[in-house]
Amino acid sequence: MKKFATFLAIVVAVMFSAGLVIGASAPDKVSLDFVKKSKAAVEFNHKGHTEKVKECKECHHKGEAGKEEKCSSCHKAKTEGKAVEYKEAMHTKCKDCHKKAKGPTKCDDCHKK
Image (tube, rainbow, N blue to C red; front, side):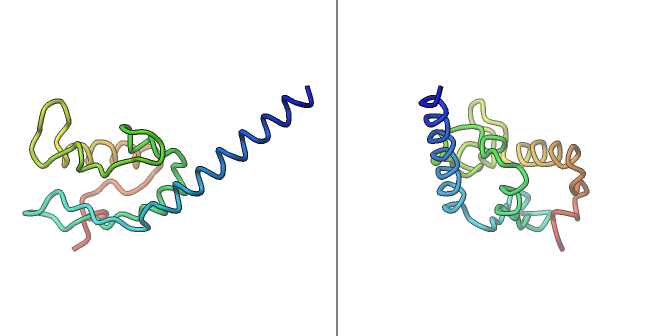
């Protein structure tokens, strides 16, 4: 039993350390420019969201931990293959989460003029 507790403590410590390293390499802020003609870019506070969401896979649903890609890597301006268009993906994922977490949901709340 003592060996199992030690093993479990090591696993938790490694997972926690990996999370700090992964979080440390992520940008603090990201500019999401997917509605170029009609709305201003969304200045996305990535660091603030990582502190609230905790799990990168909530947004970065493809790729393995530590190798997450930008949303635009799969979600292009125009639909390609099975991936949802970038604008639609951002509006759906972000707004759905914001509704649950009581975050901003109106256009001008995110697209600052």
